[in-house]
Image 1 (cartoon, rainbow, N blue to C red):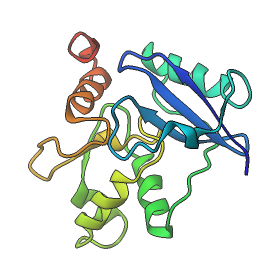
Image 2: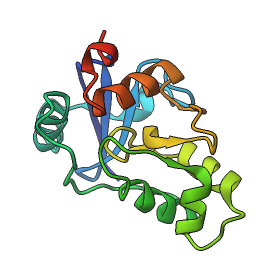
Image 3: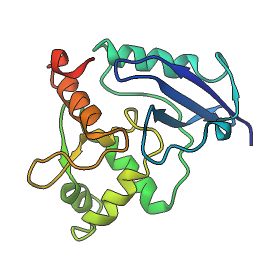
Length: 165
């Protein structure tokens, strides 16, 4: 297993991109909850597998891209994989509740399990876990912080002046 990383600037602070065997496997925000130690990110590689990821992230932040088309190396349980796939089905600028995702997975009683799997999403922004909200419309946990979640949702709804630093 070969792990490399790079760090890019974004309107939401530095983003650390990590690739495993040449495919994006993690995206970490500065101060992100459950962020592993820097030494687990492998050697720094400015080129390698990252140019297309960076190009698509820059297009997203420039309001030119609403759906990422990237190969991802997401390691998780079969249930987590299903949740992460459902996250990718939430359209840009829209939100879904944990209950709606659980229902889409065929188990309306699995809201808490969906929330736990959502929290383990290794590639935030690209796999848009920020688009998941509470049943009453409230913003709930986000590994990158609720402030970032609020700004990302505002950005996607065309209120970028509220979203950026």
